[in-house]
Image (cartoon, rainbow, N blue to C red; front, side, top):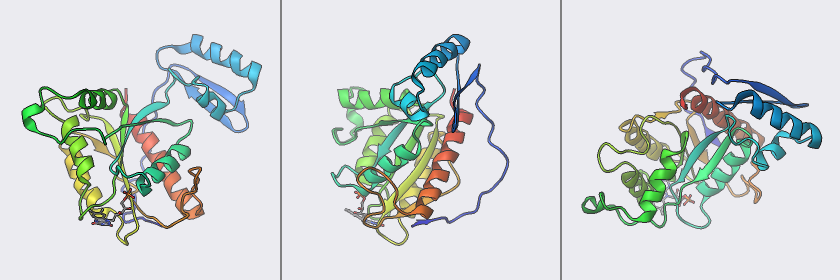
Length: 252
Ligand code: FNR
């Protein structure tokens, strides 16, 4: 079960992303898509394809038609590199809850060398790949396990590479969200708090509420990424929706 440790600080609405045009894609449920730059021509193109095929929002997303629209891309960094990671499972569940709202772009961190400042100006292709991937994202989503009351070494290593050399941080100024799963009672709270401090140093605007410390139990997330407990699902949906608003408010 998630543990919500803080009440919302403010009920002030988060500003909406300004769009050049919008389109009602289907009547039930209604899905509105806003356009950046491409405007009315793109709207007309998609409208005619939808009218012909009666596509749902999910099919629209799967078909890649939302590219160029304002579904923002989020670089997803999972701090666990083990195969059966519960944090990877949680990422899959969040991706499902964010369908049609955010595009998840997973960052691979298990093939990076150990950070050594001697090599920061001659990075390996894997390091360069990650920096470019993160720099191209509209937002950052971190899923952190807790290892010895902090973030795992693999995650710290990935962060160190992404933020060096000095002045070239790929994170700078992006909106971010932090979440973590553990089987323990306090469920990643300390690791998350360390991560928040690290990210503040790179001007990452992290989602303040809700804090999401997920205490993982077997069966909480099924093999298809569905959250089986309704209370947890509702909580995670709220987390995703707040992050969508934060990204929309900050990303350009
Ligand atoms: C842990 N674990 C752990 N859990 C916790 O809640 N607080 C902690 O400080 C630690 N410390 C810790 C250290 C090390 C080295 C390991 C390997 C594990 C347990 C940890 O939360 C558990 O293994 C999770 O399953 C890790 O997440 P992934 O890898 O399944 O995503």
